Length: 484
Image (cartoon, rainbow, N blue to C red; front, side, top):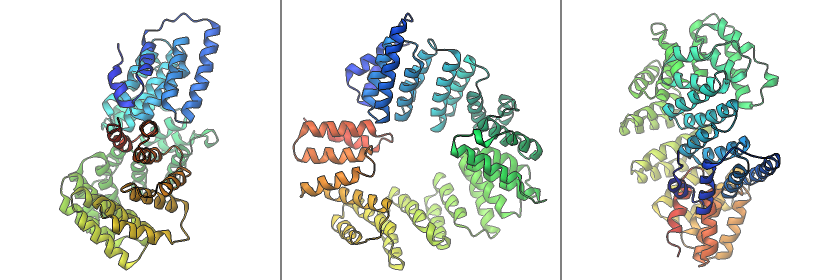
């Protein structure tokens, strides 16, 4: 098996000598002295320091050197794997896992395969996730995290019976017990028994601890109404990312939920998350007909219509959502609504909407949304007027201050006139998050304006290295192409 160096080099912008060094991992032998193991472990510690500082290139180099020195260093494999997963290079992570499995213990190989499976699962590549979890279980059939992952895959595929068979029950591990409890559906006694085995004092992950707590609270509902309790349970399934379980549970009460608005809403939301948009629209509209006048119904209806390519009805649903939304939630709905308008080449309508809302009630967030619209329209004069107005506000929180500095930078980078102001704003922006790739993109633009090509290239390459989403890196790559 050969790692595709060209793809790795192009995607990560790692210097070629690093790519060659990484390539050498795949041709290592297994004979290593104790001294080499000690040296390799030291290199891993150094690499982990680079990783903590998000210096991915240096971390890759040092992890690779560690593996050259000791080919079975599991921590080096895990470190490289983490970088690939952070950057979204799942193909490379999978190839690395295959090579690691030849040199490390079965349990460590299972752990590495499971991490890659989790990476695929997170981006909804269910088939590849399934393959990785199965590879993990081939190495160590009792590896619980892989069992949980594979069961999750089966749930997403709608194969609940296979998910149940994958989890044997009776385990105290929180993640395992939680999913096993979900799979009991409306067998409340069995579900409560499973989740009751978890000792919250042993759960370090706060998110997981909250899910266990929430599920126990649902099971503790003191109400004889089974439909109400199961609807609440369906909500837990949806919130935990298992919409098919909510569909399976609520459709088993198809007659009973006909006139129950909450159940219709949760079923519609479950269908939406599962990707059955027509059924989602049907159930969400049913909730509306049952007088459920809630912003979440209309927002999810708008999303369902949009996913089914019915933009007109989607926009109508967003309008209705705005008419019923509470003040504290309005800005988020407006932001989502505006994004849909802009995406569908209706930016003037988006501008008019926000201008009208600002006439009703001014707010920082709404002004920033309007500034963003003007930026996209390249109406810089209007954008500048809004930013000048916001500069005068004295009661901004940290998040608002950060947003204002960012938009001021976007504004002045369109036409740099004052280098000192630009430098000052960039340094100020960096204080909010020194690992923000946009900080280095702004620096690259400024250095390019000053015709300092060496520093511009360094800053833009750092922006690419730090960007885990892709949008900043894409712009940085385009700018790099203009530098000689």
